[in-house]
Length: 263
Image (tube, rainbow, N blue to C red; front, top):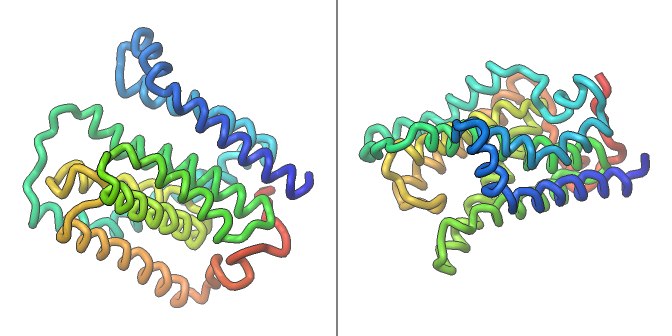
């Protein structure tokens, strides 16, 4: 399969998902009437709209390798544990410096934390970034910028103010780059960005930091500490274990060959 065909399949599959996602509320409402459980229908709807990407992934890597190529076949507990470590500045900062938000709906809390973390990372990092970066010769920058732009644009609904929207776009764009970098550097273990995303969202939902992804000064200090800890720890960890960085001069823009997941 040529490079152009691989890229076309990945982009087309994600485009189909993006189109189906515009009907997310309609599909969920239909499932609500059948399943009678809002959270369950929310999860099922995410799987339904993601079907084009699952089919495309199977085309590249059939069977169990399809999950592995998305980053789900690696160490679950290692990813969860390091993600919790990285998120501690936000969680502890929220606990000591902000008031608790009243939890009016537990299903919404799970949806905005665990579900958002899992599905957004699976689709944007595991599929779009991961397959472009690993199954084609595109390097980190072209792969991640495309994925991060789409990821950031999906958060613009949080504000109608132009400047605030620009800020939200910038924050979520850089978040997309960070999650993709961590995904790559931790041996394509998607569980780490999944849990880090979920824990960061959890801090935002549990504590009165802000109503949008932009945040105020203190909220951004703790978010910055979490980001710094994740980056510095990752670099030190790999240096201590004599592991080379996945993102380097040879993989930044274009790769000499695709790294297909075959086992």
